[in-house]
Length: 523
Image (cartoon, rainbow, N blue to C red):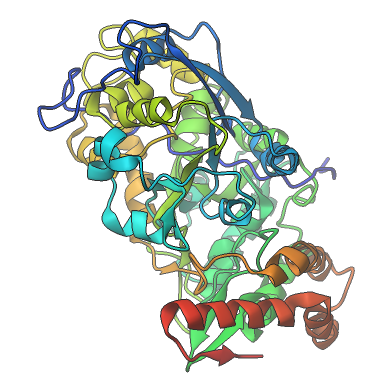
Protein backbone atom coordinates (compact mmCIF):
# COMPACT_ATOMS: atom_id res chain seq x y z
CA UNK A 1 0.00 0.00 0.00
CA UNK A 2 1.12 3.59 -0.60
CA UNK A 3 1.25 5.72 2.52
CA UNK A 4 1.55 9.35 3.67
CA UNK A 5 3.87 11.12 6.17
CA UNK A 6 7.03 13.29 6.00
CA UNK A 7 8.51 16.71 6.38
CA UNK A 8 10.71 18.85 4.23
CA UNK A 9 14.30 19.06 5.30
CA UNK A 10 17.06 20.86 3.45
CA UNK A 11 19.98 18.53 3.47
CA UNK A 12 22.61 19.67 1.23
CA UNK A 13 25.34 17.24 0.42
CA UNK A 14 28.26 19.20 -0.57
CA UNK A 15 30.82 18.31 -3.19
CA UNK A 16 32.57 15.18 -1.95
CA UNK A 17 36.23 14.33 -2.52
CA UNK A 18 36.82 15.70 -6.00
CA UNK A 19 39.82 17.97 -5.89
CA UNK A 20 43.40 17.29 -5.15
CA UNK A 21 47.01 18.16 -5.13
CA UNK A 22 49.75 17.59 -7.61
CA UNK A 23 51.94 15.89 -4.97
CA UNK A 24 52.11 15.37 -1.24
CA UNK A 25 54.46 18.29 -0.85
CA UNK A 26 53.39 21.88 -1.46
CA UNK A 27 54.28 23.21 -4.88
CA UNK A 28 57.26 25.48 -5.20
CA UNK A 29 55.02 28.49 -5.77
CA UNK A 30 53.24 28.09 -2.45
CA UNK A 31 54.15 29.99 0.68
CA UNK A 32 55.15 27.68 3.49
CA UNK A 33 53.36 28.13 6.78
CA UNK A 34 55.55 29.86 9.39
CA UNK A 35 54.54 29.38 13.03
CA UNK A 36 52.30 32.06 14.53
CA UNK A 37 54.02 34.97 16.25
CA UNK A 38 56.09 33.85 19.21
CA UNK A 39 55.29 30.17 18.63
CA UNK A 40 58.31 28.69 16.92
CA UNK A 41 58.24 25.61 19.16
CA UNK A 42 55.23 26.44 21.32
CA UNK A 43 52.12 24.33 21.80
CA UNK A 44 49.63 24.35 18.94
CA UNK A 45 47.04 27.11 18.99
CA UNK A 46 43.52 25.86 19.70
CA UNK A 47 41.03 27.09 17.10
CA UNK A 48 37.27 26.58 17.10
CA UNK A 49 35.12 26.05 14.02
CA UNK A 50 31.39 25.74 13.44
CA UNK A 51 29.98 24.40 10.17
CA UNK A 52 27.08 22.44 8.65
CA UNK A 53 27.87 18.73 8.64
CA UNK A 54 27.39 18.43 4.86
CA UNK A 55 26.52 14.76 5.30
CA UNK A 56 29.76 14.10 7.16
CA UNK A 57 30.69 12.93 10.65
CA UNK A 58 33.30 14.44 12.96
CA UNK A 59 35.56 12.03 14.84
CA UNK A 60 38.04 13.26 17.41
CA UNK A 61 40.34 10.33 16.59
CA UNK A 62 40.27 10.95 12.83
CA UNK A 63 43.87 10.37 11.61
CA UNK A 64 43.32 12.73 8.69
CA UNK A 65 42.37 15.71 10.83
CA UNK A 66 45.16 14.78 13.26
CA UNK A 67 47.60 15.05 10.36
CA UNK A 68 46.13 18.40 9.32
CA UNK A 69 46.50 19.67 12.88
CA UNK A 70 50.11 18.53 12.96
CA UNK A 71 50.98 20.14 9.62
CA UNK A 72 49.14 23.41 10.40
CA UNK A 73 50.32 23.56 14.04
CA UNK A 74 46.83 23.89 15.49
CA UNK A 75 44.38 22.00 17.68
CA UNK A 76 40.86 22.06 16.26
CA UNK A 77 37.66 22.22 18.26
CA UNK A 78 34.96 21.57 15.65
CA UNK A 79 31.18 21.76 16.05
CA UNK A 80 29.31 20.24 13.08
CA UNK A 81 25.57 20.87 13.09
CA UNK A 82 22.97 19.11 10.93
CA UNK A 83 22.36 21.10 7.76
CA UNK A 84 18.68 21.61 8.44
CA UNK A 85 19.32 22.95 11.96
CA UNK A 86 22.39 25.01 11.21
CA UNK A 87 20.86 28.40 10.41
CA UNK A 88 18.51 28.53 13.40
CA UNK A 89 21.20 27.42 15.82
CA UNK A 90 23.79 29.76 14.38
CA UNK A 91 21.35 32.67 14.58
CA UNK A 92 20.92 31.98 18.29
CA UNK A 93 24.68 31.76 18.75
CA UNK A 94 25.21 35.02 16.89
CA UNK A 95 22.56 36.73 19.01
CA UNK A 96 24.63 35.88 22.09
CA UNK A 97 27.66 37.58 20.54
CA UNK A 98 29.83 34.54 21.23
CA UNK A 99 30.85 32.67 18.10
CA UNK A 100 33.78 30.32 17.39
CA UNK A 101 37.02 31.50 15.82
CA UNK A 102 35.77 30.35 12.40
CA UNK A 103 32.23 30.08 11.00
CA UNK A 104 31.47 28.27 7.75
CA UNK A 105 28.34 29.99 6.42
CA UNK A 106 26.15 29.78 3.33
CA UNK A 107 26.98 32.06 0.42
CA UNK A 108 25.71 35.48 1.52
CA UNK A 109 24.46 34.63 5.02
CA UNK A 110 27.34 36.60 6.50
CA UNK A 111 25.79 39.86 5.30
CA UNK A 112 23.17 39.87 8.05
CA UNK A 113 25.83 39.59 10.77
CA UNK A 114 28.64 41.87 9.59
CA UNK A 115 27.18 45.12 10.88
CA UNK A 116 26.72 43.54 14.31
CA UNK A 117 30.50 43.57 14.70
CA UNK A 118 30.74 39.78 14.89
CA UNK A 119 33.38 39.32 12.21
CA UNK A 120 36.96 40.45 11.84
CA UNK A 121 37.92 42.78 9.01
CA UNK A 122 40.53 40.66 7.23
CA UNK A 123 41.84 43.43 5.02
CA UNK A 124 44.96 44.18 7.15
CA UNK A 125 45.90 40.49 7.52
CA UNK A 126 45.48 38.70 4.19
CA UNK A 127 48.67 39.76 2.41
CA UNK A 128 50.92 38.83 5.30
CA UNK A 129 49.28 35.69 6.66
CA UNK A 130 47.27 34.23 3.78
CA UNK A 131 49.19 34.62 0.49
CA UNK A 132 48.03 31.23 -0.81
CA UNK A 133 44.40 32.15 -0.23
CA UNK A 134 44.86 35.37 -2.18
CA UNK A 135 46.61 33.53 -4.99
CA UNK A 136 44.29 30.54 -5.26
CA UNK A 137 40.93 32.33 -5.14
CA UNK A 138 39.77 34.41 -8.09
CA UNK A 139 39.81 38.21 -7.71
CA UNK A 140 36.13 38.42 -8.65
CA UNK A 141 35.23 36.20 -5.67
CA UNK A 142 37.05 38.51 -3.29
CA UNK A 143 35.32 41.48 -4.90
CA UNK A 144 31.90 39.81 -4.75
CA UNK A 145 32.21 39.22 -1.01
CA UNK A 146 33.38 42.69 0.03
CA UNK A 147 31.09 44.49 2.48
CA UNK A 148 31.23 48.28 2.38
CA UNK A 149 34.66 48.05 0.83
CA UNK A 150 36.12 45.70 3.44
CA UNK A 151 36.86 41.98 3.37
CA UNK A 152 35.15 40.17 6.23
CA UNK A 153 35.00 36.67 4.74
CA UNK A 154 36.99 34.17 2.72
CA UNK A 155 34.97 32.99 -0.29
CA UNK A 156 34.51 29.36 -1.31
CA UNK A 157 34.28 28.99 -5.08
CA UNK A 158 31.24 27.21 -6.42
CA UNK A 159 30.37 25.70 -9.77
CA UNK A 160 27.02 27.39 -10.50
CA UNK A 161 25.50 24.25 -12.00
CA UNK A 162 25.05 21.83 -9.11
CA UNK A 163 21.83 19.93 -9.61
CA UNK A 164 20.83 17.16 -11.98
CA UNK A 165 17.41 15.66 -12.76
CA UNK A 166 17.90 11.89 -12.84
CA UNK A 167 15.76 8.89 -13.74
CA UNK A 168 15.90 5.13 -13.37
CA UNK A 169 17.25 4.27 -16.82
CA UNK A 170 16.68 0.58 -16.13
CA UNK A 171 12.97 1.34 -15.63
CA UNK A 172 12.87 3.18 -18.95
CA UNK A 173 14.44 0.16 -20.63
CA UNK A 174 12.01 -2.29 -19.01
CA UNK A 175 9.08 -0.14 -20.14
CA UNK A 176 10.58 0.37 -23.62
CA UNK A 177 10.54 4.16 -23.16
CA UNK A 178 13.00 6.85 -24.21
CA UNK A 179 14.48 9.60 -22.08
CA UNK A 180 11.88 12.41 -21.87
CA UNK A 181 12.62 15.60 -23.77
CA UNK A 182 9.51 17.69 -23.01
CA UNK A 183 6.76 18.06 -20.42
CA UNK A 184 4.35 15.72 -22.21
CA UNK A 185 6.90 12.92 -22.41
CA UNK A 186 7.94 13.61 -18.82
CA UNK A 187 4.35 13.18 -17.63
CA UNK A 188 3.93 9.94 -19.56
CA UNK A 189 7.14 8.61 -18.04
CA UNK A 190 6.01 9.45 -14.50
CA UNK A 191 2.67 7.74 -15.06
CA UNK A 192 4.40 4.61 -16.36
CA UNK A 193 6.82 4.61 -13.42
CA UNK A 194 3.85 4.75 -11.05
CA UNK A 195 1.28 2.53 -12.70
CA UNK A 196 3.12 0.05 -14.94
CA UNK A 197 5.09 -1.88 -12.31
CA UNK A 198 8.54 -0.83 -13.62
CA UNK A 199 10.38 -2.99 -11.07
CA UNK A 200 8.25 -6.01 -12.07
CA UNK A 201 7.62 -7.15 -8.51
CA UNK A 202 3.87 -7.41 -9.04
CA UNK A 203 3.17 -4.74 -6.41
CA UNK A 204 1.73 -1.23 -6.57
CA UNK A 205 4.63 0.30 -4.67
CA UNK A 206 6.44 2.79 -6.92
CA UNK A 207 6.06 6.49 -7.69
CA UNK A 208 7.25 8.64 -10.54
CA UNK A 209 8.45 11.62 -8.48
CA UNK A 210 10.09 11.54 -5.08
CA UNK A 211 12.68 13.63 -3.30
CA UNK A 212 16.20 12.77 -2.31
CA UNK A 213 17.10 16.08 -0.70
CA UNK A 214 14.22 18.58 -0.59
CA UNK A 215 10.88 18.47 -2.34
CA UNK A 216 11.41 21.96 -3.79
CA UNK A 217 14.42 20.69 -5.71
CA UNK A 218 12.56 17.88 -7.43
CA UNK A 219 10.24 20.36 -9.13
CA UNK A 220 13.00 22.66 -10.36
CA UNK A 221 13.27 21.22 -13.90
CA UNK A 222 9.52 21.72 -14.31
CA UNK A 223 9.82 25.39 -13.44
CA UNK A 224 12.83 25.55 -15.76
CA UNK A 225 10.64 24.32 -18.59
CA UNK A 226 8.57 27.47 -18.09
CA UNK A 227 11.68 29.65 -18.21
CA UNK A 228 12.00 30.39 -14.49
CA UNK A 229 13.82 29.24 -11.40
CA UNK A 230 12.02 29.90 -8.11
CA UNK A 231 14.92 29.17 -5.78
CA UNK A 232 14.54 27.13 -2.63
CA UNK A 233 11.99 28.94 -0.46
CA UNK A 234 14.87 30.87 1.12
CA UNK A 235 13.98 32.40 4.45
CA UNK A 236 15.43 35.83 3.78
CA UNK A 237 14.51 36.70 0.19
CA UNK A 238 11.54 36.31 -2.09
CA UNK A 239 11.96 33.42 -4.47
CA UNK A 240 14.27 34.35 -7.33
CA UNK A 241 13.53 37.47 -9.35
CA UNK A 242 14.28 38.17 -13.00
CA UNK A 243 14.99 41.25 -15.11
CA UNK A 244 12.96 41.85 -18.27
CA UNK A 245 12.56 45.08 -20.20
CA UNK A 246 14.23 47.06 -17.40
CA UNK A 247 11.80 45.73 -14.79
CA UNK A 248 12.46 43.23 -12.03
CA UNK A 249 9.70 40.75 -11.18
CA UNK A 250 9.62 38.05 -8.47
CA UNK A 251 9.24 34.55 -9.86
CA UNK A 252 6.84 33.55 -7.07
CA UNK A 253 4.02 35.77 -8.39
CA UNK A 254 4.73 35.45 -12.11
CA UNK A 255 2.36 33.93 -14.65
CA UNK A 256 5.07 31.40 -15.56
CA UNK A 257 5.08 30.26 -11.93
CA UNK A 258 1.29 29.88 -12.02
CA UNK A 259 1.52 27.80 -15.20
CA UNK A 260 4.15 25.53 -13.63
CA UNK A 261 1.96 25.11 -10.54
CA UNK A 262 -0.90 24.00 -12.77
CA UNK A 263 1.30 21.37 -14.39
CA UNK A 264 2.56 20.08 -11.02
CA UNK A 265 -1.01 19.94 -9.66
CA UNK A 266 -2.01 17.75 -12.59
CA UNK A 267 0.81 15.37 -11.65
CA UNK A 268 -0.44 15.35 -8.06
CA UNK A 269 -3.97 14.62 -9.20
CA UNK A 270 -2.64 11.80 -11.37
CA UNK A 271 -1.08 10.34 -8.20
CA UNK A 272 2.40 10.06 -9.71
CA UNK A 273 3.98 12.13 -6.91
CA UNK A 274 4.93 10.34 -3.70
CA UNK A 275 2.13 11.37 -1.28
CA UNK A 276 4.77 11.72 1.44
CA UNK A 277 6.60 14.30 -0.65
CA UNK A 278 5.85 17.31 1.55
CA UNK A 279 6.23 15.67 4.94
CA UNK A 280 8.95 13.03 4.72
CA UNK A 281 12.25 13.59 6.50
CA UNK A 282 15.32 13.74 4.31
CA UNK A 283 16.90 10.55 5.61
CA UNK A 284 13.64 8.66 5.10
CA UNK A 285 13.24 10.12 1.61
CA UNK A 286 16.70 9.04 0.51
CA UNK A 287 16.15 5.58 1.95
CA UNK A 288 12.95 5.25 -0.05
CA UNK A 289 14.89 6.11 -3.21
CA UNK A 290 17.64 3.63 -2.28
CA UNK A 291 15.01 0.91 -1.81
CA UNK A 292 13.88 1.36 -5.41
CA UNK A 293 10.51 3.03 -4.83
CA UNK A 294 11.14 6.28 -6.77
CA UNK A 295 11.80 6.68 -10.49
CA UNK A 296 12.79 10.35 -10.74
CA UNK A 297 14.22 13.07 -8.54
CA UNK A 298 16.29 16.21 -8.94
CA UNK A 299 19.00 17.09 -6.44
CA UNK A 300 22.68 17.82 -5.90
CA UNK A 301 24.83 16.08 -8.52
CA UNK A 302 26.40 13.77 -5.91
CA UNK A 303 23.18 12.20 -4.61
CA UNK A 304 22.91 9.53 -7.31
CA UNK A 305 26.55 8.41 -7.75
CA UNK A 306 27.77 8.95 -4.21
CA UNK A 307 24.98 8.93 -1.65
CA UNK A 308 22.83 6.27 -3.29
CA UNK A 309 25.36 4.05 -5.03
CA UNK A 310 28.46 4.38 -2.88
CA UNK A 311 27.24 5.16 0.61
CA UNK A 312 23.82 3.49 0.72
CA UNK A 313 24.89 0.59 -1.52
CA UNK A 314 21.76 0.85 -3.63
CA UNK A 315 23.01 -1.65 -6.19
CA UNK A 316 23.22 -4.29 -3.49
CA UNK A 317 19.57 -3.61 -2.63
CA UNK A 318 18.43 -3.13 -6.24
CA UNK A 319 21.07 -4.81 -8.44
CA UNK A 320 19.78 -3.49 -11.76
CA UNK A 321 19.33 0.14 -10.68
CA UNK A 322 20.88 2.58 -13.12
CA UNK A 323 20.56 6.35 -12.64
CA UNK A 324 20.95 8.57 -15.67
CA UNK A 325 20.72 12.38 -15.99
CA UNK A 326 17.94 13.82 -18.13
CA UNK A 327 19.83 15.76 -20.75
CA UNK A 328 19.71 18.30 -22.37
CA UNK A 329 16.64 18.95 -20.23
CA UNK A 330 12.85 18.98 -20.17
CA UNK A 331 11.44 21.52 -22.64
CA UNK A 332 8.29 23.48 -21.92
CA UNK A 333 5.61 25.01 -24.16
CA UNK A 334 8.00 27.60 -25.59
CA UNK A 335 10.95 25.25 -25.97
CA UNK A 336 12.66 26.50 -22.80
CA UNK A 337 14.48 24.35 -20.27
CA UNK A 338 16.89 25.12 -17.46
CA UNK A 339 18.01 24.71 -13.89
CA UNK A 340 18.69 26.89 -10.88
CA UNK A 341 22.06 28.65 -10.87
CA UNK A 342 23.79 28.55 -7.51
CA UNK A 343 26.16 31.31 -8.57
CA UNK A 344 29.92 31.09 -8.23
CA UNK A 345 29.97 31.53 -4.44
CA UNK A 346 29.42 28.29 -2.53
CA UNK A 347 29.92 29.59 0.98
CA UNK A 348 32.30 31.63 3.11
CA UNK A 349 34.52 31.42 6.16
CA UNK A 350 34.14 34.27 8.63
CA UNK A 351 36.58 34.88 11.51
CA UNK A 352 35.32 36.11 14.85
CA UNK A 353 36.24 39.66 15.78
CA UNK A 354 36.98 38.28 19.27
CA UNK A 355 39.45 35.62 18.15
CA UNK A 356 42.61 35.74 20.23
CA UNK A 357 44.92 34.89 17.35
CA UNK A 358 43.75 36.04 13.93
CA UNK A 359 47.23 35.33 12.57
CA UNK A 360 47.00 31.67 13.62
CA UNK A 361 43.51 31.32 12.13
CA UNK A 362 44.66 32.71 8.80
CA UNK A 363 47.81 30.59 8.81
CA UNK A 364 45.62 27.51 9.27
CA UNK A 365 43.31 28.53 6.42
CA UNK A 366 46.33 29.44 4.31
CA UNK A 367 47.69 25.92 4.84
CA UNK A 368 44.33 24.44 3.83
CA UNK A 369 44.70 26.28 0.53
CA UNK A 370 48.04 24.64 -0.29
CA UNK A 371 48.15 21.59 -2.50
CA UNK A 372 49.17 19.50 0.49
CA UNK A 373 46.34 20.83 2.67
CA UNK A 374 43.83 20.33 -0.11
CA UNK A 375 44.95 16.77 -0.72
CA UNK A 376 44.73 15.88 2.95
CA UNK A 377 41.31 17.43 3.48
CA UNK A 378 39.79 15.70 0.43
CA UNK A 379 41.58 12.37 0.03
CA UNK A 380 43.14 11.62 3.40
CA UNK A 381 46.62 10.31 4.02
CA UNK A 382 48.56 9.18 0.96
CA UNK A 383 49.46 5.51 1.11
CA UNK A 384 46.73 4.83 3.65
CA UNK A 385 43.54 6.24 2.14
CA UNK A 386 44.67 6.61 -1.47
CA UNK A 387 47.68 5.92 -3.68
CA UNK A 388 47.18 8.42 -6.47
CA UNK A 389 44.48 11.03 -6.87
CA UNK A 390 43.58 9.72 -10.33
CA UNK A 391 42.89 6.22 -9.01
CA UNK A 392 40.33 4.62 -6.75
CA UNK A 393 40.65 4.94 -3.00
CA UNK A 394 42.30 2.19 -1.02
CA UNK A 395 40.03 -0.18 0.87
CA UNK A 396 40.66 1.84 4.03
CA UNK A 397 39.95 5.08 2.21
CA UNK A 398 36.69 3.79 0.75
CA UNK A 399 35.61 2.51 4.15
CA UNK A 400 36.35 5.92 5.71
CA UNK A 401 34.44 7.64 2.92
CA UNK A 402 31.45 5.30 3.27
CA UNK A 403 31.44 5.94 7.00
CA UNK A 404 31.45 9.68 6.18
CA UNK A 405 34.42 10.73 8.34
CA UNK A 406 37.18 10.94 5.73
CA UNK A 407 36.78 14.59 4.66
CA UNK A 408 34.90 16.70 7.21
CA UNK A 409 37.10 19.73 6.46
CA UNK A 410 36.75 19.52 2.69
CA UNK A 411 34.30 22.43 2.51
CA UNK A 412 36.55 24.96 4.20
CA UNK A 413 38.72 26.24 1.36
CA UNK A 414 38.12 25.75 -2.37
CA UNK A 415 40.53 24.97 -5.19
CA UNK A 416 38.24 24.78 -8.18
CA UNK A 417 41.07 24.38 -10.67
CA UNK A 418 42.13 21.19 -8.90
CA UNK A 419 38.57 19.89 -8.98
CA UNK A 420 38.57 20.35 -12.75
CA UNK A 421 42.04 18.86 -13.16
CA UNK A 422 41.16 15.69 -11.27
CA UNK A 423 37.86 15.39 -13.09
CA UNK A 424 39.64 15.60 -16.45
CA UNK A 425 42.48 13.16 -15.66
CA UNK A 426 40.93 10.60 -13.33
CA UNK A 427 41.18 6.89 -14.12
CA UNK A 428 39.08 6.00 -11.08
CA UNK A 429 35.83 4.32 -12.25
CA UNK A 430 33.99 5.90 -9.34
CA UNK A 431 35.24 9.34 -10.34
CA UNK A 432 34.34 8.68 -13.95
CA UNK A 433 30.80 7.85 -12.86
CA UNK A 434 30.72 11.07 -10.85
CA UNK A 435 31.83 12.96 -13.94
CA UNK A 436 28.68 11.95 -15.83
CA UNK A 437 26.63 13.96 -13.34
CA UNK A 438 29.08 16.79 -12.78
CA UNK A 439 29.45 17.49 -16.48
CA UNK A 440 25.72 17.47 -17.11
CA UNK A 441 25.09 19.81 -14.15
CA UNK A 442 27.46 22.32 -15.72
CA UNK A 443 25.87 22.14 -19.16
CA UNK A 444 22.22 22.97 -18.42
CA UNK A 445 20.87 26.42 -19.11
CA UNK A 446 21.12 28.12 -15.71
CA UNK A 447 18.71 30.73 -14.36
CA UNK A 448 20.32 33.08 -11.85
CA UNK A 449 18.53 35.38 -9.44
CA UNK A 450 18.98 38.99 -10.62
CA UNK A 451 19.65 39.93 -6.98
CA UNK A 452 22.54 37.48 -6.62
CA UNK A 453 25.12 39.09 -4.35
CA UNK A 454 22.98 42.11 -3.42
CA UNK A 455 23.25 42.65 0.36
CA UNK A 456 20.37 42.15 2.75
CA UNK A 457 18.04 45.07 3.27
CA UNK A 458 16.17 45.98 6.44
CA UNK A 459 12.93 45.03 4.72
CA UNK A 460 14.42 41.64 3.90
CA UNK A 461 15.20 41.06 7.54
CA UNK A 462 11.72 42.20 8.57
CA UNK A 463 9.53 40.62 5.91
CA UNK A 464 11.65 37.93 4.30
CA UNK A 465 10.83 35.00 6.61
CA UNK A 466 7.07 35.66 6.52
CA UNK A 467 7.05 36.06 2.74
CA UNK A 468 9.04 32.87 2.20
CA UNK A 469 6.83 30.96 4.64
CA UNK A 470 3.71 32.15 2.82
CA UNK A 471 5.16 31.20 -0.57
CA UNK A 472 5.90 27.70 0.66
CA UNK A 473 2.52 27.22 2.33
CA UNK A 474 0.65 28.32 -0.77
CA UNK A 475 2.84 26.23 -3.07
CA UNK A 476 1.83 23.10 -1.18
CA UNK A 477 -1.83 24.15 -0.98
CA UNK A 478 -2.05 24.91 -4.69
CA UNK A 479 -0.37 21.63 -5.65
CA UNK A 480 -2.40 19.43 -3.31
CA UNK A 481 -5.67 21.23 -4.10
CA UNK A 482 -6.26 22.60 -0.61
CA UNK A 483 -6.50 25.97 -2.35
CA UNK A 484 -7.68 26.25 -5.95
CA UNK A 485 -5.56 28.08 -8.50
CA UNK A 486 -8.60 30.26 -9.10
CA UNK A 487 -7.43 32.10 -5.97
CA UNK A 488 -4.22 33.15 -7.70
CA UNK A 489 -4.98 36.89 -7.65
CA UNK A 490 -5.81 36.68 -3.97
CA UNK A 491 -2.48 34.93 -3.37
CA UNK A 492 -0.57 37.66 -5.25
CA UNK A 493 -2.35 40.43 -3.30
CA UNK A 494 -1.60 38.74 0.02
CA UNK A 495 2.02 38.18 -0.99
CA UNK A 496 2.39 41.92 -1.55
CA UNK A 497 0.65 42.82 1.73
CA UNK A 498 2.79 40.44 3.76
CA UNK A 499 5.81 42.49 2.76
CA UNK A 500 6.70 41.10 -0.65
CA UNK A 501 6.14 44.45 -2.38
CA UNK A 502 8.15 46.43 0.18
CA UNK A 503 10.88 43.80 0.14
CA UNK A 504 11.13 43.89 -3.64
CA UNK A 505 11.26 47.69 -3.74
CA UNK A 506 14.04 47.74 -1.15
CA UNK A 507 16.09 45.22 -3.12
CA UNK A 508 15.63 47.19 -6.33
CA UNK A 509 16.73 50.39 -4.58
CA UNK A 510 19.91 48.69 -3.40
CA UNK A 511 20.42 47.07 -6.81
CA UNK A 512 20.24 50.45 -8.55
CA UNK A 513 22.64 52.01 -6.05
CA UNK A 514 25.26 49.29 -6.29
CA UNK A 515 25.02 48.55 -10.00
CA UNK A 516 24.31 52.02 -11.28
CA UNK A 517 20.99 50.81 -12.62
CA UNK A 518 17.64 52.40 -13.26
CA UNK A 519 15.31 49.42 -13.07
CA UNK A 520 11.81 49.44 -11.56
CA UNK A 521 9.45 46.84 -10.07
CA UNK A 522 7.58 44.66 -12.52
CA UNK A 523 4.54 44.31 -10.27
